Amino acid sequence: MARIVAVSWSDFSVRYVLAASRGGKLSVEKAVTLPLTPGEPDDVLADAFANEKLSGVTTLISVERASVEISHFTLPPADDSELPELVANQAIRESLTASEDSPLDFVAMQAEPGQPREVTALALAPADFDRIKATCARAKLTPSRLLYRPYAAASLFHRTAATTEGCCLLVNIIDDEVDLSVVERGEVLFSRTTRLPAPVTAPEDYRKIFAEIPRSLLAFPENQPGSKSVTSVYVFGRAGDHQPLIDQIADELTLKVQTYDPFEAAGAVAADVGDEPGCFTALLGMLLDEAQQHRHAIDFLHPRKQPKPPNRKRTLIAGGGMLALVLLIAAYYVWDEVSTAKQENDGLRAQLNELEETLERAGEKERVAAAMGEWQSGEVVWLDELRDLSLKFPSNRDAVVLRMSMAASRGGGGTLTLRGVARHPTVIDQMERQVRDEFREVRVPRIQERRKENAYNWHFETSVLVSKRGRTQYGGQQDLGDNANVAAATDANSPEVADDAAASQQQPR
Image 1 (cartoon, rainbow, N blue to C red):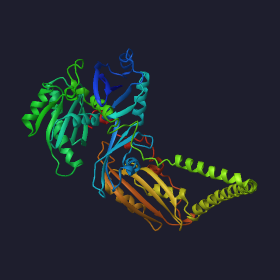
Image 2 (cartoon, rainbow, N blue to C red; image 1 turned 180 degrees about the vertical axis):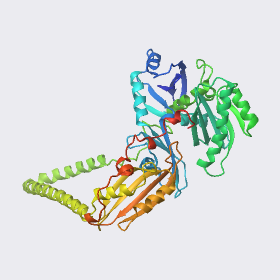
Image 3 (cartoon, helix red, strand yellow; image 1 turned 135 degrees about the vertical axis):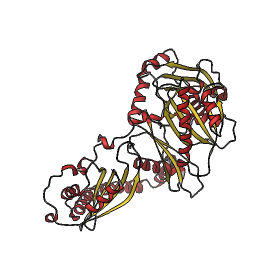
Image 4 (tube, rainbow, N blue to C red; image 1 turned 90 degrees about the vertical axis):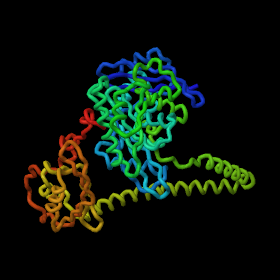
């Protein structure tokens, strides 16, 4: 019998469910809610588990929406084994905050062979990842898995709800947060989380939650184009919980609405959970997934990875053993001949190793010399090129360069690639006209609008083909002034390009 504990915390409470698993069946031992004063939950967690025997217990930690950046994109036709590498590369390109150090996992919609793959990638912010690990360490907990809360709740609903309906909207109210997820046959098609100023206690709080439901239904088709439509709403909780919200949905929306008791669905007793059993939906989903299949939709500690190539070590060892046996039998009959051949082979092998080392050293020098020659053959004076580009580039009040790379071309000249943001497409057109001259050809293969709270809503990627020219053909020394975009653009702390993660604390996600 394996024991599992699922833990979550917010600004207002700490919750955990301790259960035992045997043969895929879950037996809940404890389901506890502990109030939390504003601040880190370290002391409350430590006190809660001080008397629990958690040695060897699988620990599941819930991750809320505020710590995760979600990206939706379409990939070319690919097998599941090819997706991890494709998703990692695309997610880093699409995101302004995710990096190679960000824990990243994804879910991919099923598709027919040869069809594009719809993917939802989730990246956990490194700072939040370190914070979660530090909180668990101070509470003497060793996380076995880091799981995404909305997907865990949807998994429990899929496993236990006796419904044959199409798309359903799941509403999960947890303290001051509300998870809104559209699911169909176990797949999460759309998910967002909205935060209230305080935990839900009054009828006006339910009116605020109700206002977010039509917004979610309107946003859903934009993320999942097609004929799918939501037909029913499930509010997590016991019968009678969140009744003002249920009544308003029934009165004002043409949708079926009902409650979903997670403890009743999972066959568990909810004696000590207080007045809000719906807050435990994600924790029960995490426990049931771990008990039945040891696999979860999203796990930031064990993300999907490229499969390792087959291990042929045993086959090679067996073949080597047989070869050694044959050589020993042959050596028994022709000892002298084999001994002489061995000595000759050892001498030749030593000579071969020396020649290979000499060749490798010569090859390294040749590669360095070739690289230097290729760089010099371009005849592009990059410092002068950057100075001229900065003088012709729009003001940093209109455009900012986020990423820049330079490369020499084999036939001379070079290529300069810029990725950045601008206030308006006309700024990008202005940049093209100002930069283009007899020595530069400007291309803008991609322009995309992304609405943010800051003024830089237009993202662009520009390639500048630079022709060869002499030093005397560059402009004179000039003060760069406000146009020093290229040198300052990569400052991650620039207020114009700062991520709006802080604003997500007060707005729907």
